[in-house]
Image 1 (tube, rainbow, N blue to C red):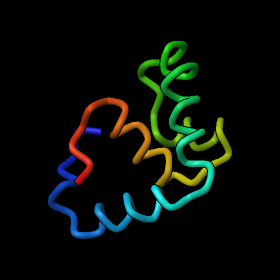
Image 2: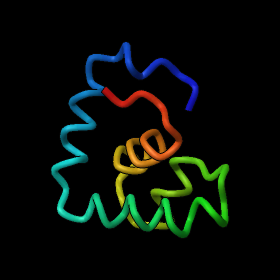
Image 3: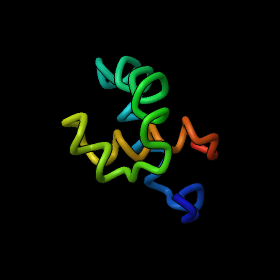
Image 4: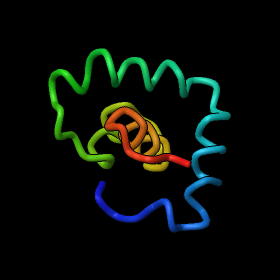
Length: 71
């Protein structure tokens, strides 16, 4: 995820939307505690498929967990 999302005016909107999802915190914790230990280079597309979540949620989770700027 090396693109400049911080310059995209829709990135903060996506973050706000994802943070409002009921299972977001549980998904993020599961990705942090389980999935990234097994597959640290997992793509957002693969994460979305494996968790059954939207691509947007997967992008936000990975961005936050990998320490990239999200706001």
